[in-house]
Image 1 (tube, one colour):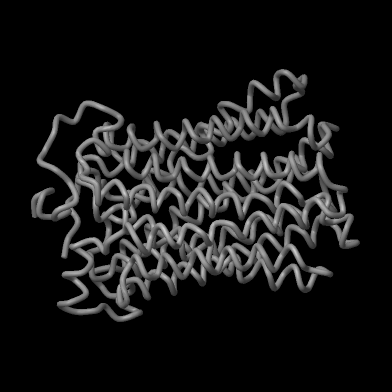
Image 2 (image 1 turned 90 degrees about the vertical axis):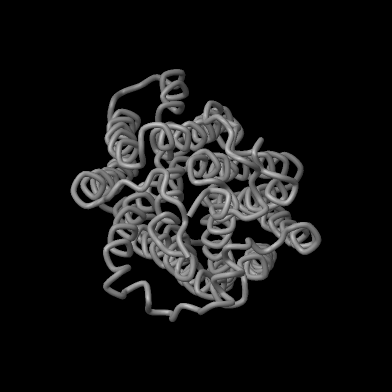
Length: 426
């Protein structure tokens, strides 16, 4: 199957593979609208999710709780996102990618709105469960939609820019927090933050008017719909196991680190909420660069080398950040390599997962593998919070982050097959 056939009507004729932005230049109007819808959804998804880690200390005080419980709520959210991702992936194979994406955006917006009105830990947990289902579903479906409208040789770069929108969402969350803390009391600020998190529902109107179902998905659905358990068939089981292991490591490392970095800065570095903003902005910017360059590198050198390099470098960066005595300016400077290496392989991950499965099982396959990783990796925020009863937060973060990066490294080294440049299959 040629690239032109693969993305029927969405991508122009082959162009020289020379630029970071060639993937976008070769898209026509429909393809570009699809890209912006996917990236916009992931931006707002990231904003909604990252509002909680930013407010975690305030929430513990306001709801008379502790770090272990707050970490547990994050883990429950991530576990629900795993369920949502799997179900949404399967649903997208049956009713369409675009329709499913609208449903997931509505769910995570509703979950954030309900969080704003929570009166106790139980209500907050239930609200975050709703958000989690939508969060996981949107991530799985949007990535599949984008993978099906971009040429194979550009897929890593397209996924890089798509993934980088999560860092933009994190930046928006930080801005929302700064404004809420400045303009409202601490008890009210977290409610305002979660209320703002309901605004992504407006994106649904753009999607309904401007985004079409990818032709390759529509054709596959018209021929035959895959069963829910087909991802475990002999032809798919290797891809399912490999993809799940990669995402367990990737998601575990991300959530063990990024959930707790804001609290680490406050509790162990003694940096106030507003004073921590430059540190977090440096981390967010470096994550954005990591997502984008990781996608380019995976197109240039392959998916496996990117997994191996970034997982090893991330392990080293986390250890230095949490265990080497550093001044505050040094911590600020180290935020750049920390964020860059911690997320650089995510772009290769999303491209690789989509390349492992045929079109008829891609939604279910990506939905399951990406969110199986979330289901296991999602336990790490709780585990980090629980471990703080026995050791320091920095020790707890580093232990679970290093375990995660080790899983990524060994999976890429021992069982992953290179998928760079693979044309999507019907």
